[in-house]
Amino acid sequence: MEIAEFCREIETYLCKKNDGHLIRVVGPSFDLVSGWAERGVPLKVACSGIDRYFERYYRSGPRRRPVKIDFCEADVLDVFDEWRRATGVRSHHEDAGGAEHPDAARTSLPMHLKRAVTRLTSARASDAIGPEFDPLIDRLSTELDAARSKTGGLRGDARAAVIARLDTADVEMMALGSAAIDAPGMETLRAEAEADLASFRGAMSADEYARALEGAVQRLVRDRLQLPSLRFA
Image (cartoon, rainbow, N blue to C red; front, side, top):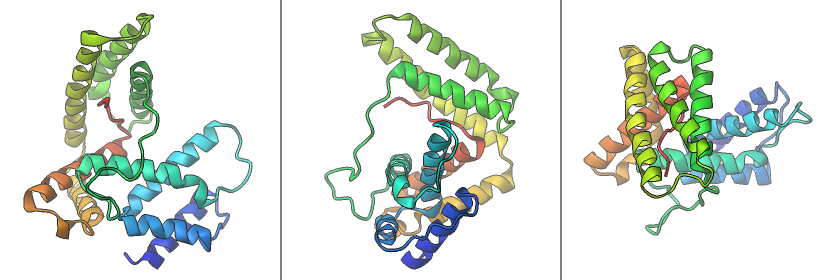
């Protein structure tokens, strides 16, 4: 996608999120969004970052004024970082030294568990996922209760054990998620993942691309079913 087209798509998406109120992506805003395109941020990833900002904005109370795209940058880059970690690809502007966008302050383990339970429960209530996820939600709720009961917080071996169980639970959750989407749906997600990775493919080996494609598909499964990442890193 050309940079100008990318910016137009972002402008259109922002207009929809602002209930039809048009906020032009021009001047410094155009430079900002152009930077996302130059980094290789996929359009769907950018839109997910915009969604994240709007979700937080609405949680803070009634909407006061239309949102400018500039306000969404931190969330867009956060989601792009998450996407890159899931796929293993590098940003076009990232050197060999590591990530170009620093991670947000680390969430505590109890807070991570709380958010995971809340998101899974919300997905279940909205019928995004089915009752086959109930045992997993129950186990995570039990882990959350246990973490909250430790006044000094989880430490040492106990903390490591919970983190290991979360890794296992994430694998289980994604297996359930993939099984919940029919074959045509998975083919559609795979095509979307291939499109997202298109600008990176030339710099990747066959094995790297295969791993990245699997990661991108799994991320799209998460998005479709409103599933959180259970891994704590």
